Amino acid sequence: MLDSLTERLARVVKTMRGQARLTEANTQEMLREVRVALLEADVALPVVRDFIARVRDKALGEDVVGSLSPGQALVGVVHRELTALMGGDLPAAERELNLAARPPAVVLLAGLQGAGKTTTAAKLAKWLIDERKKKVLAVSTDVYRPAAIEQLKTVSEQAGAQFFPSHANDAPVEIAQRALDHARRHYLDVLIVDTAGRLAIDEAMMQEVAALHAALSPVETLFVVDSMLGQDAVNTARAFADRLPLTGVILTKLDGDARGGAALSVRHVTGKPIKFIGVAERIGGLERFDPERMAGRVLGMGDVVALVEDVRKAVDLQSAERLAKKIQAGDRFDLNDFKEQIGQMRRMGGLSGLLDKLPAQLAAAAGQVSDKDADRQVRRIEGIINSMTAAERARPELLKASRKRRIAAGSGVPVQEINRLLSQFEQMRSMMKQMKKGGLSKMMRAMGGLSSLRGGPPQLPKR
Image (cartoon, rainbow, N blue to C red; front, side):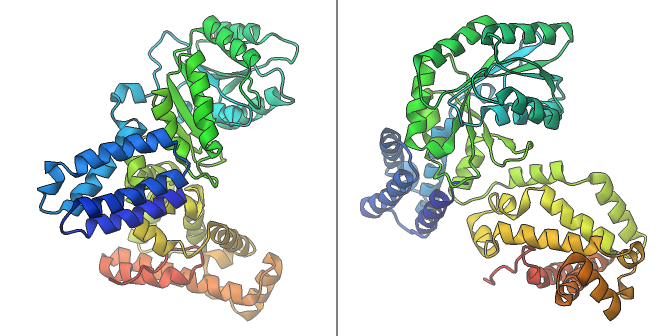
């Protein structure tokens, strides 16, 4: 997410921190680097000018010039202004999803075709179900795009939301009104309305979505925009903001090759907060947008809070407790446990999902392995373990040459891969023994040995 912008700004931040004294000359040089980084990331020119002007005013003010560590103080200014640019200056209540309405609270999604509205509808439904414990109904009023209604039905089922059926020959406003009536009669909490889009702004689309808004009086009208649009995202946002009383923005596809400028421009142009970001294709790949934490990510400082949230969601606490009790009781860590730990990492979104939230220095050290390679290795490990018998998984010492050859043939890998897996397993089992003894420092040293696992925890450079 925002890789090139983060990489460039992280370098600037490192330079800033190293400055013992700030002068107008070196401040100008740093701000020039920041300006180039923002423009390369497709941030709108008026937004860049405004941002640089605000940072310059504060960087040359008393707070920074008189500071004992002016480089650090300047980093703080950039962080605060970046946070404000992305909506941190708005009241916290405005940045929250507002469901304070007589049920069902109606959430209307608007945007161009291809922005990801239908998938976002399902992701938002899942977030509401998981995080807010709401009963959600989804309905599609897109009667123009082939299979749009069927697509929403499929992804709504995956999200665990109810789906209201509609047909291509129905009028969009009538569909929405029937869905609203159904939600009222069945005491549902939230109605998510997916609207039709076009490849470009046109009057017919705007009139239709305006009519839906008038008929439904939604508590939230969210503009869904593809972050990969770059400058076009800004123009589209402005057009929708002029015609609809938007309450917020959802940025999609931030896990792609987007330069990310839309994240820094759309809020400035619409004046509305970014409420969610789409960070993965999976149904659970929707995150609450927090300007301060996103500013930290963009500046290469990482987002430990988001990382902890990912762990909380992905890790099976009962399984973790069972493993902890097993280790404490002196029972052996076996290949079933090893496979479970590997699976936990995959459920957290893979290696890239973790690296994205680490500070730039750690992410750079860990990023020597691509997410694709790491995921392939995880699948290979799972395949090898699945080719073993229950007795072999419980007692790895049974795995002699003939058994290894059978497992290698069954999982389609060379025998050397079996030996490598067993070596990695022994390293983790050693760590588990250290945990039982309380030898944390020894365990941390042992973790360095796991760098042999392609896609596993890397060995960080020594300082």
